[in-house]
Image (cartoon, rainbow, N blue to C red):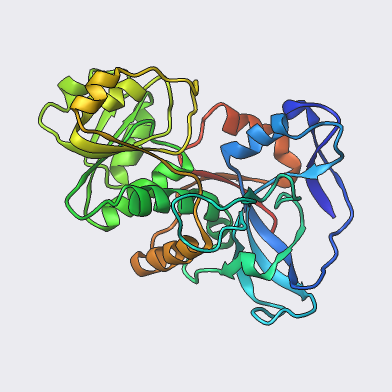
Amino acid sequence: MKAIVHENKAGLEGLTYKEVSEPEVKKNQVKIQLKAAGMNRRDIAVTHRHSPDSGPLVLGSDGAGVISEVGEDVSQWKVGDEVVINPGLGWANISEAPPEGFEILGLPDDGTFGEYIVIDQDHVETKPNHLSWIEAGVLPLAALTAYRVLFTRGRVKKGDTVMLPGIGSGVLTFALKFAKAIEARVIVTSRSQEKLEKAKSLGADVAIDTNSDWNEELKDEKVDLLIESVGRATFNKSLKIIRKGGTIVTFGATTEDTVEIDIRHFFYGQFNLLGSTMGSAEELRSMLAFIEQHQIKPEVDRTFQLSEYDYAFNYLKDTKNFGKIGFDLS
């Protein structure tokens, strides 16, 4: 089968599109003919984390397709079932943090950027009927992350004001749609006027420039929950804009990871700072039920063929996207 593979060189230079062996089904596994796969910033990080000397690795965490073969003892699925893949391996039930041994598909195991994938039967779910193949393929990782950030960790509720600095990523576009579905108020920021306009078209109530004075721009607002994924460039602005007793949930950093804070300001403000990563299979099923109930679809920026991997990875690296990027394998 054809696949996007990382080997021999660190970083994006180690990527190739080549013929690899088709995976074989074992006990309790299903084989999926992929129709679509979604890109995440994690895929870029993996090209640096995967040792060039450890052999070829098929990248990719997100995907959807049709079951083409089932292994021994598979009882949940049959050939022809349309499914989405749960990229979180080894995290079954909601918990405060992932259990020991939790991994994300695409490192160390082969991922979804190929024509077929074999995975344990417990790590697939039924594809929502209202989604196209591309929409289903780009859904799981980002939507699950956004769902846990908002509902499990952030405990958002109707009427809350949620702030999303750096709108444009897959996770934040899901967070915007999820928050509006429960009638929360949403504030977004971006350095791109085009992205601000797109966010407003999706329901954002307030949209401001990331480089502006947030306290001046939002002097009439009260931010209850802020989703921080930018890192050092915005973290202290985030800490100074949330209300006393408010909450910041962070799930990533597109700028520098190391952040210095005024600890006195922090404890006088009685702030809550929470971390979040991915989510459990239980939360994934809740998220799928939520998007079906509200008929929510991913915001798909654009799609590529697997053979266009070089342009696709650089497009994502340069943060040109608003929403999700996918590979069309149909």
